Length: 69
Image (cartoon, rainbow, N blue to C red; front, top):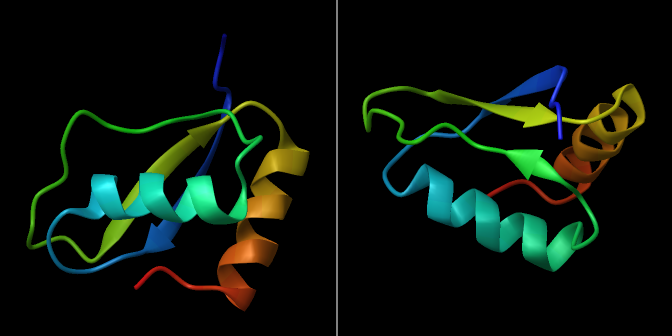
């Protein structure tokens, strides 16, 4: 799969990758995405790679209604 598109989300704190996976499983279980291998704890954002522009719009809409804890 080629993840051509990306979205940068405001996520702070530790365990960003685990928290995003749990959020995606709960809110968008059918979504195909790729995460970086790691993210520094000091960063306030996280980039998620996606397959389509529609997936990007879906993530943004869902994130606006149910942000990551």
